[in-house]
Amino acid sequence: MAKKIFFYVLIRSRKAFGNFDKCINSVFFQDNTNYKILYSDDASGYTKKQKKYIKEKLKKHIVLFNKSRKYSLRNAYDIIHKYSTVYGAIVFNLDGDDWLPHTNCLSEVGNS
Image (cartoon, rainbow, N blue to C red; front, side, top):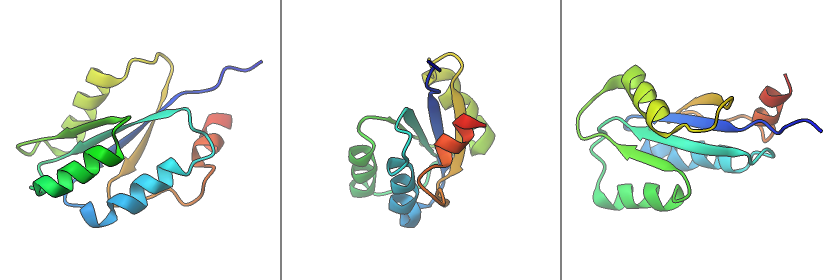
């Protein structure tokens, strides 16, 4: 029996709250549920209410809010090196203002 591949869905975001639900739901509705979201916000200046909403929606995942800009590459490096613990996992990158086009994206990547 083949081992099921684990994914980290890395979402780096800056001032993309208007697309947050569409982005996150596109991950939540994947047919492959063997993943953890690593969400990093790059000092967007969200309100407490917006931050609470994001944290609640991603309560089973990792959420970081930077107080100062670190930019995309540094955000990726920091969150991956601190929170990815599954050896051999695939890091699937998704910008905070984008979304997955269909429900089998992770399965397709895992099968290729």
